[in-house]
Amino acid sequence: MNSPFYGWIVVACAFLVLFFTYGVQYSFGVFIPPMIDELGWRRASLGGVFSLYSLVYMGFSLLSGRLTDTLGPRRVIGLGGVLLGLGIMATSQISAQWQLYLCYGLVAALGMSTAYIPCNMTVVRWFHIRRGLALGIASCGASCGILVVPLLASFIIDQADWRVGLFTLGAALFIAINVVARFMVRGPELLGLQPDGAATPPSSGVAYVGSAGDDLAAWTLSEARATITFWMLLLAFTIALLTVTVPFVHVPLFARDIGLSAMGGAAAISVIGLFALIGSIALGALSDRIGRKAAMALALCVQIAAFLIFLEADDSIMLYVGAAAFGFFYGGIASLFPALVGDLFGRTHAGAIGGFIFGGAGVLGAWGPAVAGYLRDVDGDYRLAFSLCALAATCALLLFLFLPRTDHEGSKFGALRK
Image (cartoon, rainbow, N blue to C red; front, side, top):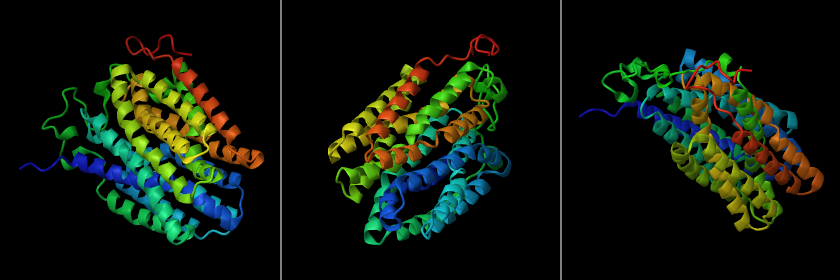
């Protein structure tokens, strides 16, 4: 009896890493209300630390991807588990704002930077024909984490307090990620295997380290940066990312504003996670039929609708409907982003190109939660913040609708060169 292909073990490990890291990351909003009650800090300050966190972890994702190529995923993801776990545990002991920005905004964020890019790039190395399926399963880990962990965090806070909750989650991260990372192998050739478990290399003649055979015209990062398409895509994702983290940070606070309990706010985050799971699968499959660009436009239309629903929400039903719509968008954009990069520029250098766009857009778009918190402090409600989020999503939609394609059918150095 043949043993299962080890690549699926790598997929399972990536699923678990993303489950723990994204589950804890997007539980942050659940901790904000009790932190405000105890420490008396303003919402803008707590939103600002999540903006710093997002800036650091997205900005350093490109570096962690390169380190994964040289040091291997075991060391990179394991080190990230140490930093993320210690950063979260240290955050549970803070008494001053500078400690929050140091422990969570810097140390924990550096650890988080070793999750998304290293996990997915490792899965890419293990699969050729079934790469989309493998990445889809791995990416579902983040959605499942968002579904489960916020409710767990809220339960711990109710039974003890927010400090015990953060320390518990940090310790779990520290242990779990370092155990899982030991099973992350860089690529199949290290175990004498081929991608997908094939007996012979793929017919395109491509080794596990790349997928150049998939693309007749593969762009390098420097070539891609010389196109209008690249910069329009970067701008569109930057605008989109301005709004992506706002609900995760502020929906629990917004839930309290409209009279819901802390558990009700945590449940809204879990609804986002549930529908993100649905969106990642549904929009990923749909994009194979209608095209990545059309699917991305659909996702952004749903995001606009989500913020308009939040704008009118005054009870739990409307809040959860808005959370469901936002989750569907979030899961969709997470699965469509790497596929869209591959469609436009080929997959040979998709890691470098996608990492540059992800890091650049993340650094520029990380300030959404801080701005939303500031507007809430000034205006006394979230109406202006949600209105601006809907406007930003509309701008991103227009950019995607007018996004030109690169000329893969002819020369790479065609009309899209600046």
